[in-house]
Amino acid sequence: MKSEFSFIAGIVGLIVVTAFAQDTLSENYLFAKQGKIVEPAVTRPDGSWEPDYQQRVDSLIYAQTWEPGNGESSQDAGKSDWSLLLAEMAKNIGDDPAIQNWIDTKGNELLNSTWAGSFFKPFSCPGYAMYYFAFKDKLPQTQLDRVYSQLYDQRTYDNSVTMDGQRVDEQVTVTGWESLMRNDHHMDPIYGYTEFNSENYHWMARLAGYLFAHEYADNTYVSYYDSFLKNWVRAAFCVGRIEWNSNNYSGYCIQSALNAYEFAATPQDKIRVQAVLDWMMIEAALHHLDGYLVGADARAKYNAYKPFAGTVAPYSY
Image (cartoon, rainbow, N blue to C red; front, side, top):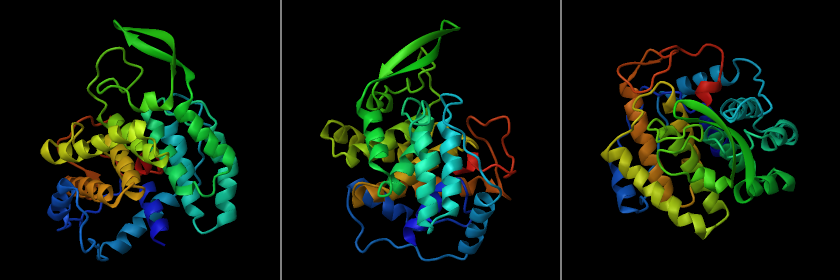
C-alpha cells in the first residue's frame, strides 16, 4: 500500500495540501545538514486533510481517459506523454496484467521514441525515471537494455539552436550522461548562449542522474551527483528557488524531488530530499488560496492562476 500511495502521490505532484505545516521541518533540516539518520525514524501520522487529498487525487486521475502521444511530437514530448501514460497506469495499480499490458505497449513505444525515450531534453527525465524505477521489476530485458543504452551510448539528435538572434540547425551527438550533466546555465540545448531560466532543468536532469548513477553503482558519476544533492539541499534553505512560486515550473521541480525521495539511494539522502519537499510544501501553502497559487512569483505562464480544467498534464509533473 505504501508504494502504491507513493506512486499516485508522484503522479499528482502539484496538488498542494494547504493544511500541511509539518513541525518536522527544522528537525529534518538539522539531520540532513549533518548527514545523519533520524532515530527514531520520523513518522507522519495521518492528518485530517488526508481524505480531502485523496479526493483531489481521484479528481485528477479519473477526470478522463488520458491519451499519451508517441514521444515524437517535439523535443519536449516527454513532459506530457510520460505523465499521461503514468496517469493511466495509476488507475490500474493492483491489476498486474493491466500494468504489464501498458508496459508492453505504450511504455515500450515511449522508451523507444526519439524524444520521450531519451535524456536529451530534461523534460523527459521525471516521467522516464518514474516509469523505470516504479516498474523496473516488471520491465522486459529489452527495455532495461534500452535505458542503459540511452545513458551510455552516443546518439545523434537534430537540434535547432539560437545564435546571434537566428535559428541554426545542427546535429548533436551525445550520451545520456552528457545530456544530464550539461554545464550550469547551459541546460537547454536550444540556446547557444548562457540562459538563466533553467532551474527546473537542473532539478529534472540532475535528480534523475542521481538515481541512475546509484542504480548502476557507477562511481564515475556517483560522487558528482552525491555532491549535487547535498548542495541542492543547502541552496534550497540558504538561497531559495530562482523560479520562486512559479505556477508552472514548481510542478516540474516537485515531481523530480518526489522521485528522488521515493527511490533515494540511502536513508540519509531520503532525509535530505524530504527536507526540500517539506520546504516546498510550506512555501506552496503560504501562496495557496482556494485552489490557486497566488501572490508574486517568477516565470508565471500566460495561463497562470487557473484551476484544474480537464487535463492532468501540468499537475502530473
